[in-house]
Length: 218
Image 1 (spheres, rainbow, N blue to C red):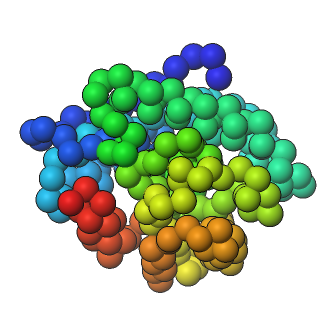
Image 2: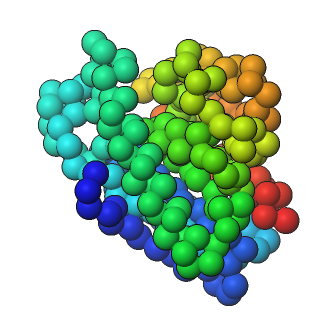
């Protein structure tokens, strides 16, 4: 991914306690989670950075081009591995930009929904520095069977928020539970939430996200 990602930036109302880099899901864009920010009852001001995924053909959608962090081929679950690494590297570059502006990585949260959550987990778990947190919404760990080969010692005490819909038709909750268990087996501390919803975000979840952000930025 040679070109830097386009981003939508919502600056903090006051001195920022940190930055949340929030990745959208398949076919959405940087504006997808923008409306949620005013709904968050935050105790301290935070900066939000919403990147746009590049446009690429997606096999599961008959090769249609759309914003996607990686290709999905139902016949080859690991086919998107190179795309995922490339997208994670692009998020690393956004992190480096925040650090250059004076925000330490320990005050940066990586968040993502669906495909975006895959990249947030990939980036945060393998980093050689600790993030403030990783928020993984309606998502999963890519190639969880080889997770131990990827994670870094620095990330082991990073707070992880995972949330999923019980009736998610796109990513069954069983896949998220398997990912949670793979993380727990490596001694990651996961705050887990499940809701009576599909592949979406609900008001109760938004409250829990705000509570979690308030705790990690206390």
